[in-house]
Length: 339
Image (cartoon, rainbow, N blue to C red):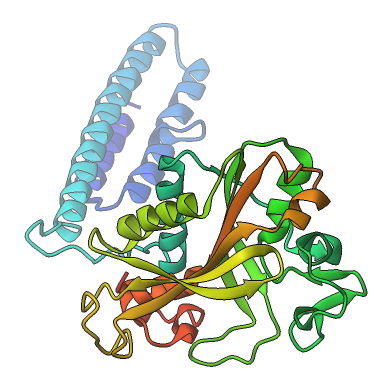
């Protein structure tokens, strides 16, 4: 029996020394030390030995078992260390290599302008309001002194969903909702998307963005309007920007005007951007029509106000030197990454 145990010990150690994989080492462990392993089988057969031989053989088997377990453990540690070393060598990182460029997006120029304008007017004490883009004609036209026979209500200019529900043509509808639901003083701007049945070209789109402003309080005059727009223009387009009014007509303001700003590129001397005129048309404005105030339950004998509105795309095109509005909607990364 002793010879057999010594033979098992010798054979196991030779195989342990020759093994090159962890799986083979595990199989060998099971073969010699498992529940059905060779050493375990000897222990199970101790009952057939004499009382004198039994403790000696049992002690010898346990000693060999301990030696094999230690040998297997050392072999396992050595193989794991070697495997780790090979892996580290294989997966070694060259810290001197340049990293992969991470593509970072940017804020769309339209959003840039909206956020900048909001900050300017928030700094002047205005609030920012929002409203539905699918709107009733009552808020877009009727309350704004635009009668049923007005050209702006024609099918060729407005997207109708039903007879009295449309895609809003201007954000003035938000101003009407505000005047109906709060008492003066009112000081607000309302940015948002608007829709008109225009053919797409370099300066027109059926979808564009507006920012309209409204102030209603006692003793508001045209001087307040001009001063507000000058402050806005200087902050948005440059400190040397000048503004001028030209007479115009809007059904919801009286008097009404178109406001131009001096070209921020040439300073008014004339260039490609301003078409050599020295001025760039910026927005429409005027004093809120007394009838509009009455429609909203505000006494025009006590309160007055001014309103203005401009296209965000027009500001973006002027500010960034863009000559085709379609570029703002095509989502061409080559174009957008400039901003």
